[in-house]
Image (cartoon, rainbow, N blue to C red; front, side):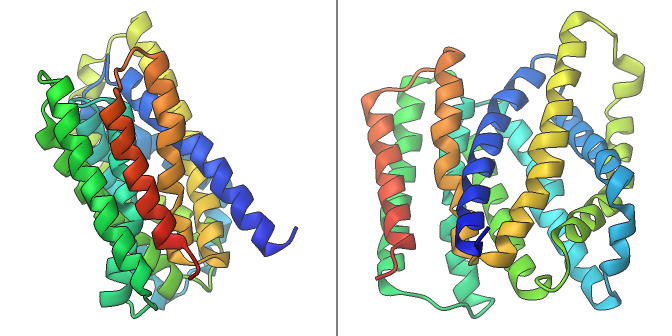
Length: 290
């Protein structure tokens, strides 16, 4: 398959997988704390990846390891907890829409820190996207006053981490296989994630009730498919596409996430959909070739 076809196939696949991850987090949070959800997600994903990807670690050279550490922390460790805390306080569909800020930060850091090229229409796209984001937060807070939309800041921080991650992978890890990058990330994260899970009292407090076993099932799906496999696909896409294109997956994720959210009884009104449209129009300008 041609590289152009592959990158679009990867983009659509990740949109479906990561768009479903928000509802999985929401369901898991019914019986588990945000700390436990984040830690379990990383522990299960690490064990899954190391079971078949351990040999790929030999592809990582000494010069790569500091960037493996950066991408592990910025692209997985901190976002796993930030998203769990955010989805615990605001609708999963809103969290997914806010996550579409990632390409804006990808462009900003790509230009200012990593010296990637920049076009004028991309700046316009950034401004329009930010306007849509602010409108979405304000209107969502009006509709759901019981939800604490200060937790939206956690999504913004996680998006910045994702943006730095994709730029680092493109610039400094583009010469090693995607499986090596992801396996290296989770090898480093396994011990700290297990430690966090231990101090969260998961092993002492967990009771095998139907609700908690269901939550573990949701986490297992999220970890294996939504984290392990999806991150391999994502890094493959970064290798053959620009950082901006790769981060554009966050524009399509809300479409899937909103679908799941509405099925689960979450409320969206016309103003929220208008705000989402404004964000997507900003995305269009950001990715337009001319």
